[in-house]
Image (cartoon, rainbow, N blue to C red; front, side, top):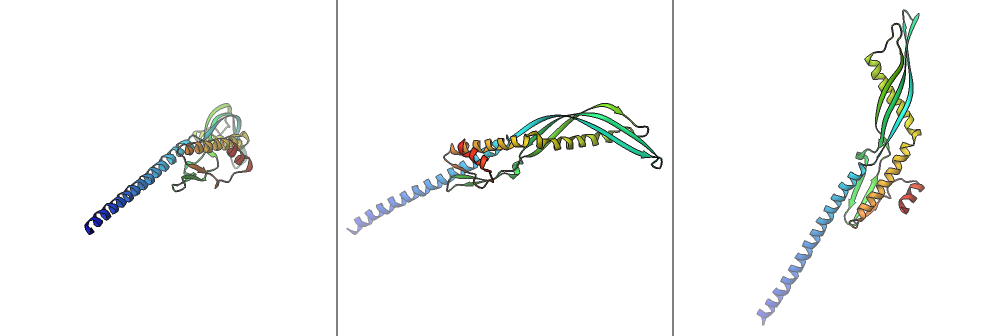
Amino acid sequence: MDALIEVVLGIVLGAVGMAWGFSSLRKKNNKELTRQQSTIILDKIKSVCKLVSVEGDFAEIYRYENIKEGFLNMLSSKKKALVVINAKAQIGYDLKKIQLEADTDRKRIILKEFPQPEILSIEPDLQFYDIKNGLFNSFSPQDLTELNSQAKKHIEEKIPESGLIDTARREALQAVLMIEKMVETIGWKLDYSALELNATDLNYLENE
């Protein structure tokens, strides 16, 4: 009788052990799958964010003038030129400033910070007209370098009134919506509550 009880008890304990082992293995596999999903989705989000940028073309006329004093400041020599600036400016985001976090327990991707749009590059193409050299003040290669720098600064000052910054912000909101839909495809949720959004932006995200 005791031997029978021991056999039955052994079978029961064995079954319990196997069930616990399968349960632990399943939980481990689920956790590994969740971690893998979070890693994949974070990589995809970073790829989407790389696409968030806008470009603008500028055509500006810039008058350059330089006066050089000589002979004990008794004489002056002026050089000048009319410069046509054709430039391409790119507005976008520094990806290093984007902060993402995966909450595997709650199956959430937390968008903790999305940076403000900034000027990524300005590529000016200068064309010179009406070039006039002074008697002892003529254009040099250094002047061309300086003009290129001044042209970039001139375009940079024009960007805020061009509307490119606002366009880049709207592109960022579109990117957040894309990220949200991407996260939802694996049954997760995107949490962007940490972002500082005005009422218009928040309404846009919630109703699109």
